[in-house]
Length: 419
Image (cartoon, rainbow, N blue to C red; front, side, top):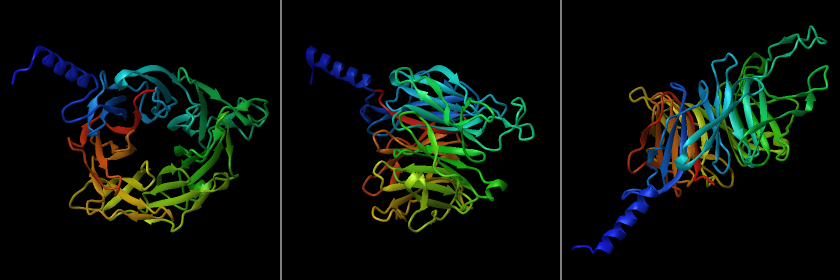
């Protein structure tokens, strides 16, 4: 059958519109964007996320420079217009925070860098209002030498970490330091520029309920166990108030991550291959959840991260290795969260745990809540999975589940279409 000239023009117009929306015969429009950090070349890989298939396609002009050395953590301001990257540096004080604006097709444009108050930034988080950025430093600024308490020029290295708080400008995304109004530098009238936390902190999480928690390393000063520093947040001023006089002891010696979801907190314990569930109490205190520690699935080892899906029904745990000597692989363990008790139960799928790329570091859910993605350090890839919202089971994407990112991938972040 021959088409009229008008028919051919109409079809060409439809095809043009579809291409402009990023649509193909096998996929749909772009539902959001993903950015993946890599330390091998200090780069950021960028992808568009297909709303139908979950397939990833490269953002134009990617990869982008991270703006520093050793990028390890990334956060997106709500609305998706600004992205912040922690460049850890090499431990000699050259760490920084890079600010990027997000343009059409998810293209990142570098704006400027900022310096946190302590040494070696390792993690960051944006509060739910998008007004404040919390940067976690492995080591706080030098402290007054106790042997020379009246000489401000005499200092010693800090034995604890800190949080640097920045206010975020709504129109530019730029950062302004928020000083600690509750504490002053000894023997001065100068407000401190940081908020202290525990020893060698590794991760910070902020809840929608106004609590901030840092995961701190285990050493001799903490009786050999990991601790958590709990703060309450002020959504108007950015001030942090320590909720208790001491850090919370976890009773675990190798906690690798902390995940906050509403009133629930989940720790991954690589030492015993367990998930440690807590509930958030008054003043951001943590209470052991009903049932206590939960064993990870068989054949899994070294859990490093977890995420609760958008429905609050399922917990997914990222495992870097396995106990299967015949088939070494990394995986995702899936659990059902009991709606009445909060207890974790095995999903019951014979394919659970689900195999993914090698050496996973971070895990996210896409903006449309259909897919889960992991950034994999060893092979520099991203693995995508479809989430069955009725059962929590994971399955491969329909057009391939593995995507090349950038060398030695660390963490990743996603954003919906920019608003």
